[in-house]
Length: 237
Image (tube, rainbow, N blue to C red; front, side, top):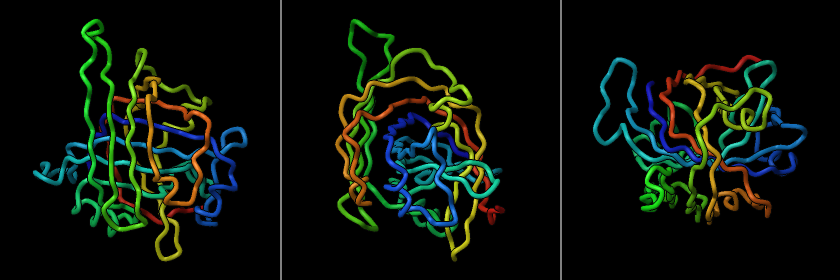
């Protein structure tokens, strides 16, 4: 499947591993960076969603999405992502993803808007407002509003850094019929910016009974990448 991921905001908090361990299947190992686990809230928008060889379908190929995730390993397989939940502003996409990819998608009403840069900084990157409210299925309530501004020049995350650990992930893992399945994605490395997080109001973490840390999160932005998404396969340890 082909997709274009745009206007991605990566908001990450450091958390003790034991906070996340009870929410991740025992078959998976938490992937830690220097002994610390991370949980990430990632809103973005998708366009051009289509099977390979087919054109985009109006009303189905473009919609906003947000995921809450952490990082895992399965034996010697590629380090990957475990999704607590994914919110999408498209009912058909939610139903298909739940059935085909066994992923915890939820239907949400979502909003993404670029604020115009100030007149004295016409070349500045725009501040972006992300918002969403989960509709179904529960648990409810679950919503977020985030306002952030990308800063600086784009760069690529360097291997071995925390940025690379959090952002450059090319595998996802999911559980179906007590079996771990792996899905691969391919894209060029993200061009990333640091970002000023002006405000965040969310209870997505609380819907999992996870207390959001008081410390300021790490925040990054990417204008996006074009992505190939491959079918699930049973993961080999």
